[in-house]
Length: 399
Ligand code: ADP
Image 1: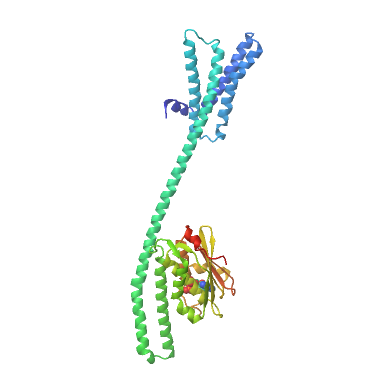
Image 2: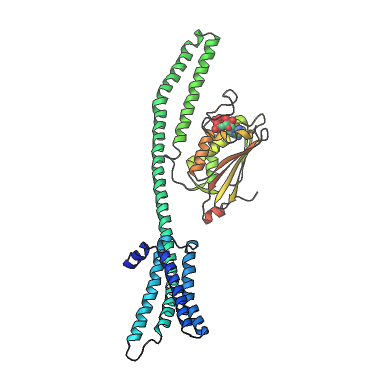
């Protein structure tokens, strides 16, 4: 900050402009009074008064209205500084003009206040623009600082998230190795007991043993599910163009036995290429189709898969004509270990849909279900489209 703005800011820039404006009005009135008393005709007095007083009035109103403009108060001093620069420059010009040998200012008491008044107003205009520019730069700087702060916070929470993901992965290792090992021991000894001693058990004993074996099997599949769930982000492959037709047919191969046993019909339109992780999308289709078969009700399962383009994404639907889902439970089923049926009614670990949601979200998409009890369910998810010409060529025919 230079000397003049330090001076004007210490006095408060706006107040200085107001004082300057009042000063010019006072000069105009005082001068008019003196000239009127000395008998000068009224019309020239009036014109000169308007010239000088007008500048004062502009400064007074302009200064008064500063708080309702976009100029930040810290830059009022810039405006005051420019007013003084205007007056000073005019003084220098007039002095130079006056000291020339063959020129001199006639009636300086009239010309000096008029011209310095005009240049103060010009200075006020220039100063206001400069102050507005400074205000904008200041606001920009403030926004930048805020953005930087948000960026730092985001980086911080990203780091925390990464840490918690790492912890989750470590937990998964513990679950897979440390927990599965003793569980395997329990299972194999239970099976040994079944093989060697089941004849010596009475009916109740055999039933209890069966429960224990099936419990340990369930626990093992839950642990395996958790392991997969916790590795979606940490072990996922980079997203790249994937042909969903190929992914689907590989999932169907894995489900061959379930499809055969249940006499299921699976129909699909030609599917597009999307940006994804083929292994995870394989798992996604497998879980949804397997559920469609599992929860098909009494009729042989019938599942239809379709795709629809929506801007930069594909909407994929897996529709079944099964038992349907109550609207109250339609969000809950995507949570880990949330099941709507007992193990006796339907086998399952309760992690399939949670895994589906985690996979879809890793792809930047959403998954939801549209369903009515008894009317079947449609699981819908979005995946990012491959935005090149190949993707358009592979578009499914509009059914
Ligand atoms: P599970 O291993 O129990 O199938 P999921 O996470 O895959 O676990 O599904 C959670 C629950 O959502 C299931 O227990 C079932 O009650 C319900 N569900 C999932 N898919 C369907 C479907 N296609 N039709 C009806 N209910 C379903």
